[in-house]
Structure formats: structure tokens, C-alpha cells
Image (cartoon, rainbow, N blue to C red; front, side, top):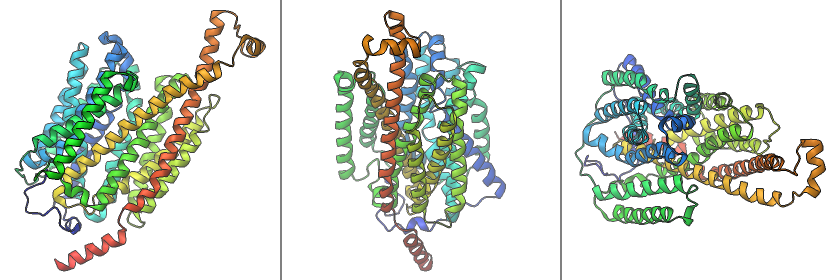
Length: 527
């Protein structure tokens, strides 16, 4: 997606440091920021808000559990495929037009999801919802960069990060409350008033960007879309289909591998490829892309593990689960707002390092979980983990783009968010697969040692179970499954903790802030 804009994408990164924000009044700036954040939160919440409503939707739509997974899968795949297209669409038709059309499409498709009468309808409308909402997060990030001074990038990214990170955390709590208080359809209807207000605010305050009629690299787009789509399908359905024991998963894997190979070759040899190679010549953007992938793996893997652990292993109801996990969002918000002030005074790499250390420590706390604990360890570790993630995400979002040329910003933010989503998909798939398999392995290992000869007295005196009949054996099996499942959860937490620690050395890939500042000063002097 190289733009025909008169800027040599291979030039020095100083083009990014000569940043001049779009001129507008303070009132318009505030209204635009509020409208952007409303659209961002609306889209990010929908990544997880429907998860807890699936059982209710399944009964209402007369669908099987396997069929209901497509309600989530179609949304994720559509958003993943359309996200890389955001940069080209913004350049071709103008950022304002693309943003407004995306909000309209997302709002209307949300209403249609709420009115769906059967499974095919809601799957199709979720597909439209994912396609429409894909541009909202990357464009909101690009707009906040454009309307703020460079020294305020930290504050702007703190605000943007709150919207991006708080949505997936609060989604299950909001979805559970709406489903229990009203019904599952309100999980989608809630987007309508937010979408209308966001559209009005953006239409009234958002400036238009210069259009750029660049040629569309159809082959590059198709190759990348097939890569991302096949990867998402493989990850979403792999555990259900026993991975490579299924021909379906083998087809997805082969499609992904071939499409990705063709995409790389095409990008390296084509004159105007879909993804600009200039993006990866910027050291900070390349480093930020690697780390945001790791953050996606770490954060969303944990978000996928906590709710089922609380509901299945500790018998917490949906609403209580939402209330217990909500403080994690508070930690994220506090961390981001604090780091928005610190980023002017401290090395961004140091702030991110502190954030990763806090996150790793919170994960160590989670490895101490047990079935006998109350809610306090969950809340404390959640707040600390959210605080750590906030310390990582804000400086990461700012330093990744500080040296990137303005002409590549739309494309860069789209790719940045695509990698975060891909990382989250891989992280969720890996931990869920390990959870299932470790539970099965541990059940077999512990179960073979349980016989009437070594358990009968203990079961009757302590657990009040009679293992001599089927009911007693079923009860005993349930207790064993619950215990080994908890051990499997702890193993996942240990894995994510190791990945978090492994991400710390990657911070040295970023250029030193002093070097960036010196280059910026030289550029200003030459101008």
C-alpha cells in the first residue's frame, strides 16, 4: 500500500518527528476525542461481550454448541481480514468518510444481530459487524496522533489505550449483566445509541485528510486475507477438531502456509505491494510490532482463562465473575492514566520494563491460586496485572509511531492492531489447548492411583462418598476433574509468566529516546 504522495518511504525517519497537529478549537478537540473513544470502546467491547451470552443464544436460536462458535468466529475473522485494508481505504476515500461509514455499518449490523431470528441470520450479521468495525480502532489511533502535539502523544495514547484495553476486560461483565437483567439481544442493542452519538460527534468535528488514489494491490490483499483467515479458522477450530488429526485443520494450515509464502514473495518483488516494506525499515515500528504481538498473547490468554476457571471450577455465577474480574480494568485505567504523565519524564523503555515486571509478578501470584481461596487473590492479582499492562501499552503505542513517517501512519496503525489481534488469537488457542490436554493427562495420572483399597476409608469419612456405587464414583470423578483442572490452569499461568519475562529483553530493540530527540532537534534546525 505504498502511497503516491511524493515522500520517499526509504528516507530518514525524521519525517515523523516534524509533526504538526491538525488545527482546531479546544471544544472541537474535546468533542472529537470523546466521539473517537466512544467508537473505540463500542468496537472493543464487542470482542468479548457476546461470549457469556452464548448459552442463552444457543437455546433461543435452537443451535448446537459447535454451531454457536461461529457467532464468535465469523466476527473475529471478518475483523482480522478487513483490518489491513484500513490504510488503503483511508488513503483512497478519506479517513473521515471511512470512519463514518464504519460506524454506520457497525451500528446497523449490531441492531440486526439483536433482531436475528435464527442462526444463519446472526452469523451473517456478525460477519457484517466485524467487517464494519475493523477500521475503528486503527483509525482512532491515527486520528489521535494527528490532532495532538508530539509531546502529548503519551497522554493521547493513554486515553486511547484505556478504550482498547478496557473493552475486552469489561465486555464479559457487561454481557453477563445485560443477559441476566434483560436478554441476550441487548448485548447488541446497547451499541445503537453509542453508535449514533459517536457518528454525530465525528461528523461535526472530524477534519478530512488528503485523499491518495493509489493502485490497489489485489493479489497482496487476497494473499494476506487468506493467511489471516486460515490462521483464525485453524486456531478457533483446532481444539474442537483435534488439530492435525482432522483433515479440516490440515487444509487450513496448508492454505495459511502457501498464502503467507506468496504474500512474502509478492511483497518483496512487487513495485507497489499491499503492505509497504518501508514500515519495517523503521526500527521502532518493527520493535513495537514484535512486542504488541507478545502483549496480545499475554493479555488475552489470561482474559480467556479467568472467567471459565471461576465459573466451572469455583462455581461463581456469571454476574459475580464479572464483578470479580472488573477490577482488572480499573488497574489498566489507573496504570494508563499514570503513565500518560510519566512518559514525558522517564525513558519509555524503562516504563515498559516496569510494566512487564509487574505483570510477571501478578502471574506468579496466579500460580498460587487454589480451589480453597476466596476472591481476594483474584482481585489483587487482577489489579496489579492491569496496572502492569497499562504501563506497557501506553508507551508502546507512542514510541512505536514516533519515528514513523506521517504518510505511513494509517497503514502502520492498521498493521499494529492486526498483530495484536493475531497474537491474542494464538495466545488464547495455545492456553486453551494446553488446558484441555493437561487436564486429560493429569486425570489419567492421578486417577490410576485411586482404587477402593486406598480411598474407601478416606472417601467415606472425609468426603462422605461411597465409591462402591455409580453415584459415588461419579461424585469422586467430579472432584478429581476439578482438582486436576485447577493444576492445568496454574500450568498455563506459569507459561504466560515465562513469556512475559522473555519479552523484557526485546525492549532494547527500540531506539534510545535521547537519539530520537537529537534527530528531531537537527531536523527542526534544518527547517
